[in-house]
Length: 111
Image 1: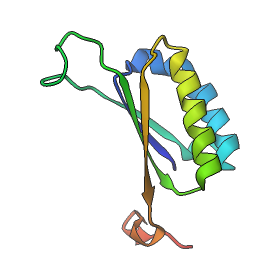
Image 2: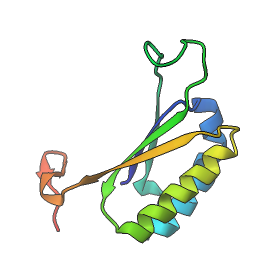
Image 3: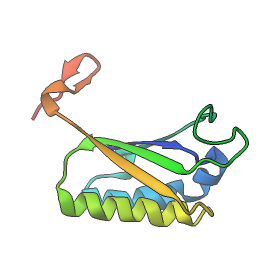
């Protein structure tokens, strides 16, 4: 964990920076790269933009809260790597999971 869900970023482009981004984020979060997932969600504009207009990047991060300083550094790193793909408008939102509400294979995560 963390889980990153990307909208407005093409999967083939994201693959170019996914591994180095995971390494950078692992350092910031003090965990291994195997804790990360990065998924691309395909979306079509039906309101607020033309269907063929490029979407801005909207990235959702689901994780266990690590504090404001780590969150700021994490958002900066994600922005830096996504900008390398030629995307200039990038928005990121964090969703903090509660350990007591997180299950793996039907079992609660042990604190």
